[in-house]
Amino acid sequence: MDDAMLKLKAQIMCGDEIAMGPGKALLLEAIAEEGSITAAAKAIGMSYRRAWLLVDAMNRCWAEPVVDTAAGGAKGGGTRLTVAGETILSAYRALDAKLAAAARSEAEAFARLLRAEPLPPGA
Image 1 (cartoon, rainbow, N blue to C red):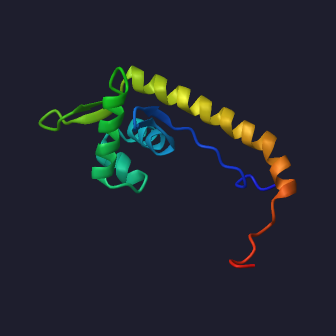
Image 2 (tube, rainbow, N blue to C red):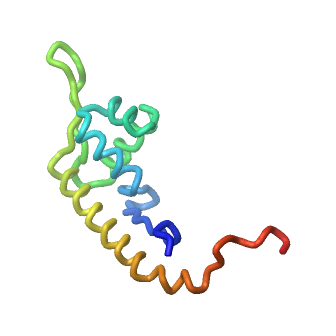
């Protein structure tokens, strides 16, 4: 059974906006590691603009901001996860682990019914 055969992803919605999903979780982890949105975006191969838009969306969706930014200057700037951001990221990763476990436990039933490769179009 191929682990990639069944992929589940969680998206936490706030109205029509994705408040948390795989990409946003990855970005938050990179921000925690790198200490800046610019460095985090670069580390995960994302444009700064895209990263900033994702941070803005998360901060607008959750009851408390998930990321706190300080502008640069003589003392330097920086970006960090707030306590709420750390809590949300941790809860999301726990949910993601549960989904991965559920996928593994159910994938065998699908594997018995699924072709190894799709038929060519029009077959």
